[in-house]
Image (cartoon, rainbow, N blue to C red; front, top):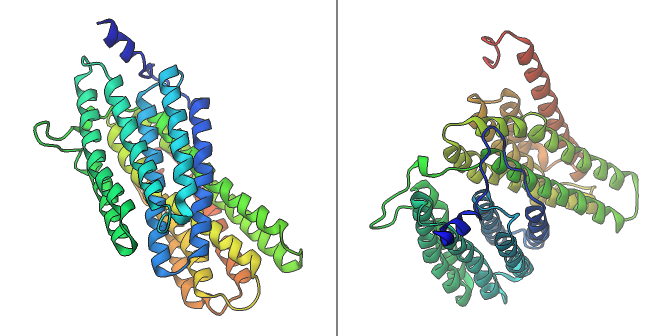
Length: 401
């Protein structure tokens, strides 16, 4: 019994009507993923061809998944305890190997990437399993289910690390497919079956804050890329204009996500009777396009800063429009999940970006950047004004638009 009590002490204490704060250990852990996000954007920039885009997308999905799974584990376990803190520090070491391997993941460092990824995923779920006392039957069964699925996918990760060329891409795509499918089927395994939504007890406010911090990481990486690129260039009216456009575009993204959406999501999941279902949909899945859009926009910012004049080539068009488009698609779906209705401003922004594709090739990269930034500003301002108007209406009328 003493062993059960000791293991149970590794779990976060649940305080009614109060969400657990993100700890300093978790913030320290996130520093590794600042590096990972930078590596992904630079890798895409260096191989902006169809195959390179597919490979980089796969690497991004892997980085997001290993981070979000760790966030789930630290939602249950308490990083203020020494064993959990040590686990996070060990995972940081694995994350550094993972991040360092990203540029050569499909060349010479594929096995290193695969080993680091599989080790991080499997080891932390085994730690969760061992840390869960037998008296917490449902939580322990969930740990068994998750470990089983991640162990199966780990085989494909390692096999891909030994393979070459297209075979590696196939093995890793299968591995990712297994992992992304597993929550949707609630980690069904023989004998134990599937978990129920009620089994997924999460501290919703903590999960919302963790994902919001990853959005900050991605936005911060965008600003770092912009500043570092400008520092190496001769300052002209065009480069300074591109710098201003990219910075204001990042501000608009921050405003769209954080002005109302992040706080509303945190409040809703904290009150929800099914926080596990909401955490799985709104934060585990729907935050992926939000973060991917910010990273792709950072790639566009660097391209525009280096070549602001002339006609926009295909990679500039795809990144300059695709980044905001992915971001708005993610945010409109996220906000639909937490509000129950589609934000009209976001829908108009998506349509405007789609129309812009037809004219983008004739624009200079600088002009294209300015137009996409203007669209994001309109979306941010429109949403702020419409939500303020809704708040002023009687409760029965608010949100009807």
